[in-house]
Image 1 (cartoon, rainbow, N blue to C red):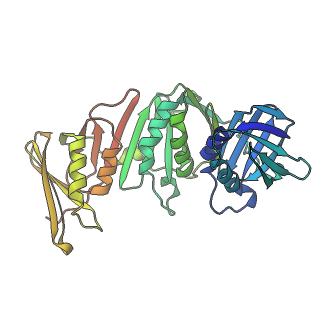
Image 2: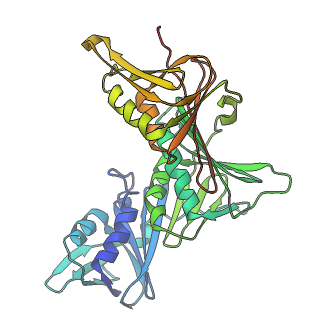
Image 3: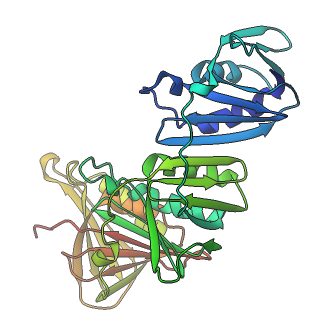
Length: 379
């Protein structure tokens, strides 16, 4: 088979799917891209068995059909060195010798039999369908992914939980210290009449792939899933991944329902103050103290081992008795960095209970709640 393709267009497609490939694979064939030519459509696949990413593009001209597996690193390293120009790929179907011809030279590869590449898992007949705008899924994954854990003992925490209800979609992620709940709407979903919800857990790696791909896409994303696998179909990409097996924790149970203290703060002022003050916190604990009194927040940190400390005072809107609470500064900075609103609402019950951080104004079609567990103060 033979085809002509733009070097930069091919490179951009291959780079997007190459992140799936592991540095060490259990099967040698997984070190390769699968190239499948059918008519004028070239389909490219990368996989690590658990996650598979597929993309396709139209080639300028084609002769014959077929598929071949090509060493991913060798092909990427070659394509990176070309300026934008047409490249001719010629593959001998009998011995899989592959030649790339450019305006000034030729480059010889040896491919592998494309039939040895792992087959895609088939969804069961009772697979569910969910569709929603790409922009909403992109925002939801971006706002929750940072909260996923790396916990070998509790693998259910190592992903984003999709909770599909009759009246909307909820994405949740938690690492037991912090939690994000992102509510949005969907276009369509297949739920039985007597079913209140269906759910699955998307692992961290495919969620990261989607976070990188979705901003370049538009329109709707179609999600099909059964008890084991999930298919994400976009206009230019298809991703298939194995779900995390297990039962996700009851996230509603850990969210305080009524909070006595409600503070409105300028997000950027608080974020910048925390970044400055946290430099002086103990490196092991990262503890910062927030002391709310009147319309002021007193932010302080110290490291007794090195005899260093820092404090700042910023304005806020707060009515009530004074309250002091401690948080891990890196977690609080991370949460504030993932909120777009200019002001945030901090809701507290007491210094030993989780604090809730909310955007003062939500974006259209989204409702975000972030939760952070406090650290105990000695004073």
